Length: 181
Image (cartoon, rainbow, N blue to C red; front, top):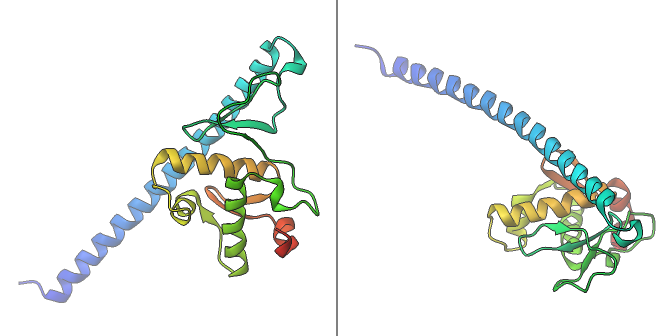
């Protein structure tokens, strides 16, 4: 009859192998996700460019910094002469020294405030799921992806950085501005 210690060692060995297999699978899935996100971003850019080319007049389309929040959390460019949508435009200006947080819409200010608090406490980057929890939102794909879209836009404009895919923190320049946020 095998000993109890021997059985425990066998189970531990099997569990470690399973953990290693799962980590490898998670790494593979993360790599596939990164490729898919890159492809999606390239597709969005291509669609935007096609829309610009097909637009009736170059002056009729708002620049890439102007977007309208859609009910599903996404955003869409707004023609310059179009009537005002139900929600106001969300403009994310390029970050520059001295630019106050008040230059951003309320949703973007909330993201900055949470990340600034984490920075002051010496805590690391935040995922969009964690942001949803901080904002008392349902952690469902639509809400998380809306936050991810906003965070990615803030990364593109220099307000945030994404040190690890899917995790966001203040850029060094914004963090250096301190309480001026």
